[in-house]
Amino acid sequence: MYFDFYDLINKYSTVFKAIMTSEGGYNNVGEYSCTKEEKEFTGAIIGISDGKIYRSAGTLKDKDKYLFMFEELPLNDTEIIYKNSRYKVEKQVENAEFTGIYQYTLKYVSAFNEEA
Image (cartoon, rainbow, N blue to C red):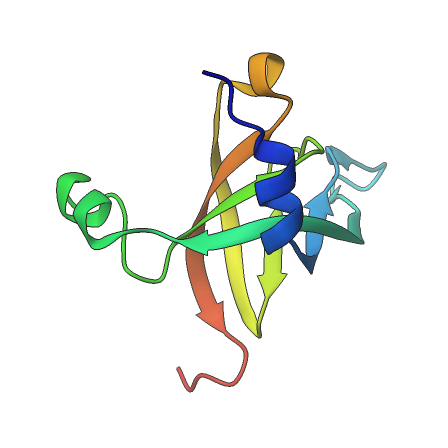
């Protein structure tokens, strides 16, 4: 049986910002520099079930999320801004060549209005 993920992802998609860091390098003075690019994407960002969090042996937390989208994101130092919270793109599930859907684990970093 074939399941059409496109309709499901389109139904729950939302707009979010991704901050992508380019490969850096050293200049003539020896200072390291890289550029950051901010871009808007569309994808379905969903919470992780309590059962998966429990079975993850501490690798997943309640504020972490899953992201499903039709475009590929770079994994090196990419951050997602969604509902005033910042997430780090940690890993990608390797099934995009079969499904056409990219799935990422988003690790919660912080909220903007949160006191340190």
